[in-house]
Image (cartoon, rainbow, N blue to C red; front, side):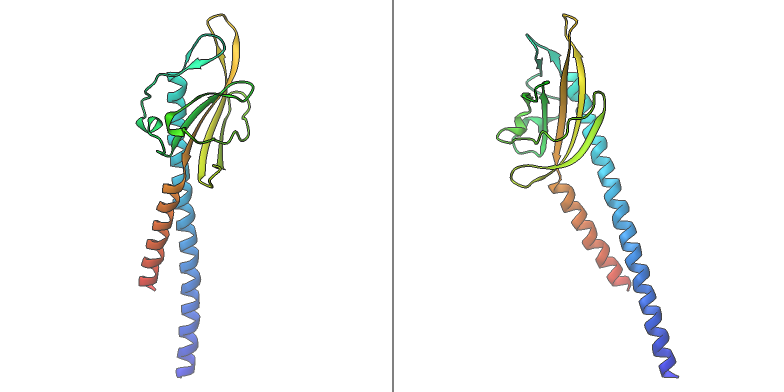
Length: 176
C-alpha cells in the first residue's frame, strides 16, 4: 500500500513541477513582452516630441531648442539619448545626455518607417533604440532626409525583470 502511495506522490509532484515550470515561463514571457511594449511606446512618444521640437536652421541643418520637454535628454548619463543624423549619416544634433557616447548608427529605416532595435553601446550597455527616417521640407522647398533616433538604456528594465523573476520563483517555491 505504501508503495502505491509513494508512486502516486512522486507522479503528482512531478506533474506539479511541470505545471509550475510552464506557468513561470508563461508569466515571465508575458511580463517581459508587456514591459518591452511599454518601453517602445514611451520611446515613440519621445521621438514624436523630438520631431515636434526640430526647426529648420541655416543651410541644410535642423536646430533643436537648448532645453527639451524631457529633462533626461539634458542630464548626462541619464540613460535616455537622442540624436539627428543627416543623409550622410553624420550626427548633426545629439542630446546632452549622450555627451561622450557614440550611439550606434545601426540599420537605417526606410523613409517614414519606425525601426525598433536592441543595440549595444561601446561599453556593453544594452539599449532599446527607435529610429525614424524622414524627409524634411525647408523654406526653400527642398526636401532633405534626416534620421531621428532615440535610445534608452535597458539596465533598469533588465533589473526590473530580474526582480520580478526572483519574486516569481520565491512565490512559486513557497506554494510548492
